Length: 262
Length: 311
Image (tube, rainbow over all chains, first blue to last red; front, top):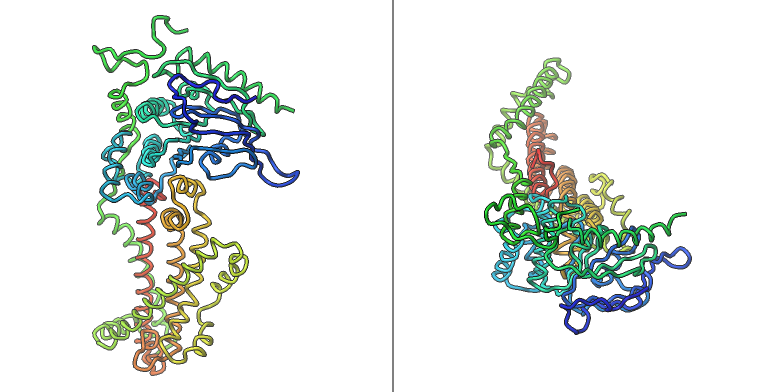
């Protein structure tokens, strides 16, 4: 059921994995009333790799990201995310409404004790990079959903973490915006070489973005299958290759879902 | 299926017609233009009318209400319901004008303002500390959470016996009444505010590297602030009640305030002065409340908590 490193991409150097999960389980509650959110997850993500986690409801995606981010501890098994901090993007931008967009981007720098001048320079550069240059003085609520998510991306990049965790970040956006943000994310990822662990329930999105798709079962979440994505970049979400791969993954996902029918 | 000749992975942008290329992932310059176009489509500037019109829209109903009150008052006097005691609006207006011209009135108002500032400030500090502690420590919440709510329902006048026993005829007694009356409202506002902080923002703050006190200062307290502000506003009302009651009941030698002056005017039978002072006290209450409302509106606008029509 588990695959470790067997599907490494050619671009991956032979170094220690950026994320290493070994026999990880997470149980909530005690005794018979307890629920296994995750069970026996073994997964390596190579530095610079883009891994998409796909699963139906109840596959413990958010639990898994919390474990990798260090916000939660596994009940069994070991989680090693390289010891460094991880950045995370959520379905909602989660920008702080009392701060301007620029101050939001500056916040992780401020928390690291970076001086005001350098903070401003870095934040301006990042906002330019996500094409929000000149909008740093706005409040989050003055931006559209796509712009907010780009601002959140800039804030995550300001953490300068080697690992970016993404929890259905584009799930609430319309298709056009989502397409453009796929391009944007891919460009940033190629430019900066960070590692991405991307959770989604959109199989095509996973095939569009990932080096590898990891399919999780539900209740408890386990690794059901791993699919390498042997396609060049940049990709189009509506290309036939992506459609073919998505069909394969979707068939497997549906068979997993059927197991839960009574 | 798609045309076999179209590369599914990447189609170079045709130089001849950049607007109709329509295929393939966007190279950086085109992505620039597409995102900019989308941003422009989704942004809508909200323009607000000139401030004079906005001010007039909230002023005229007040003027009409004031006019109706004056008419009702005139009718009450005219019916001779309480002759000699119930004065005409004109007589009270004359007294009010005279009052505003005396230096003793302004020194009394100054005494009241000082007590108001000191009592309210102490209440805010104590309420914030207690509220933060109760919101964060479950044992404290179980222990004194309902006590705080209970204290809030206590009429401020009933703190007088306690304050009088502790401090006697002093400003301190009045300030103690204010603190006992107002601090629970501040604490309850802080507790409610912290309880209502969206968990996602806390999660985001922790991911960004805010832990412990930094998380409280940078995320939890700012996120709680709009609700805390409601508590501060309510606390002001309680503090003002307690201050007026305290000054009315406790005569601090040589340092009477507006409440004490009202008591003096009443015992000396200057009924028009009593009513004039009541008007002063009500107007102060209204002005401070308007200040809080403006602040509340500004905070809500800043946090994006207003609907677009008021944004």
